[in-house]
Image (cartoon, rainbow, N blue to C red; front, side, top):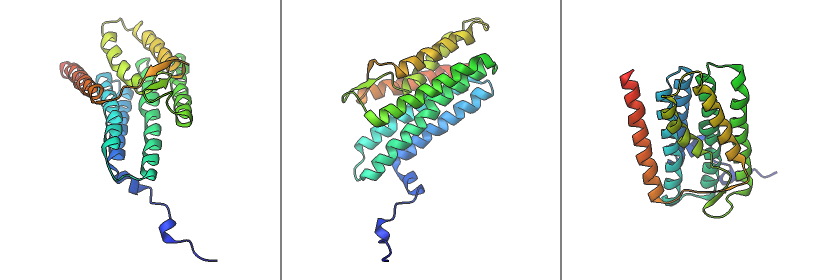
Length: 216
């Protein structure tokens, strides 16, 4: 039996780590892991900084991928899968851990943590199969919105009394999960104008939460 041509062998796993959009995606994953770490330690201002930067890198990898020439179909396909898996960690698992840690790991908050992760898994599996409704429309709220909304709400929770704040966060997480899988059409924010708005939002949130850390 003839041996398969060596040119037909698949590329190595780590060869995809050199692809610039994938490097950007992995930077976003690092931010999400840092957010999880700080949430577990109860340093929520630092966790929110990690979360907004996770969104920034999530948007940046798409911007880079669309403008980078010379990428083949396998690189694009791999990048799409990598981005989807990282979204689960950044915008599903991370908010779940923030919720649990903020509630001092009360078992009453476990259902909310499960629901936000389950909604993320269902949503991204659906998106990977069916894609967009059209070029600029999602079905359901995109997962990255979870990490855009959550830091803003955390600023407001700072003025809420502690017994009430975890409950409000619980309600928000359940609402986001419901919107992630809801049969509603939501806009896909595309273009450099939206990207510049996200950059400004990321910097402002980083400064606000950074000031909180400095003031502690």
